[in-house]
Length: 237
Length: 91
Image (tube, rainbow over all chains, first blue to last red; front, side, top):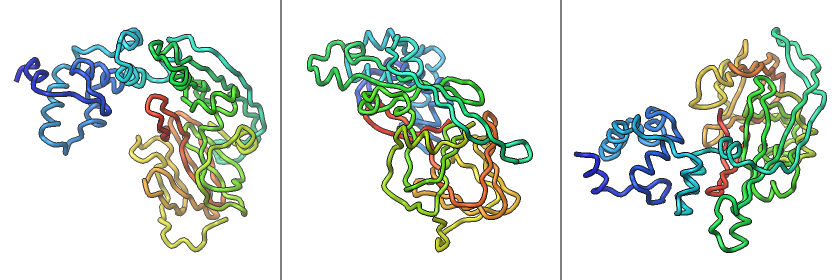
């Protein structure tokens, strides 16, 4: 079947939103970068034959497709599709390209521990910088008329750096956290625990280890406050 | 509080803490067995370390050492402002 006939005879949906085939390709290319990554996430080997047929067409057109750009996302009139594009572009590229507003910057410096090659624990001074940024809703969705919808479309992200590699990370946080205007509250929110009274936490990359204390019990999940984060963080790498 | 009564604890001397990830990432090992119980979604764990320490290694991060006790392993979380969901971050 020719590509044109395939496009004519099928409807395409991404996350429940109807898009045309070319737009879906640009979205997936930006999100997954490689065809193999797309296949692993969206199709999988045991998929229905119709999905495997789709995958074949996608594979044939993968190299000729360009990723959606920030400029193309802004040119998209349909807000729902633009939202999809922003998601595919990702927090880090979106905040780098859109000149976000720095709301708060905090340096956390405290004593912690690290380990020698033989496993011996040694005292260490941890030093982290956190920055909280925002992009106003009217910049992302200028056609929104209601002030509530514009405010709701405002996005916040905390910028931090890996203490081992120095690599930069951006993490979206909810509006109610961003509106606290505190970079420490923002990074603290990214840690959610379901035990009470932890003794301390270790963080290795995105993995969090919370040590139970003698008073710890299981509880409903809760996000840490800045105060709890600062108090509990004992090691990071 | 160490959950001594848990009878569903699995034993191993090697455990990958990020399920489905690459084997060199967040690999927990010990010279003797430690206990663990995965959560329902198999993505998080309770870890039970006895008298022998356990080490968590990753190809991009410095090692971490867990001494005796019970630990809750989880992952950092991120918000998705475009569909208002919260999910774990896996590097």
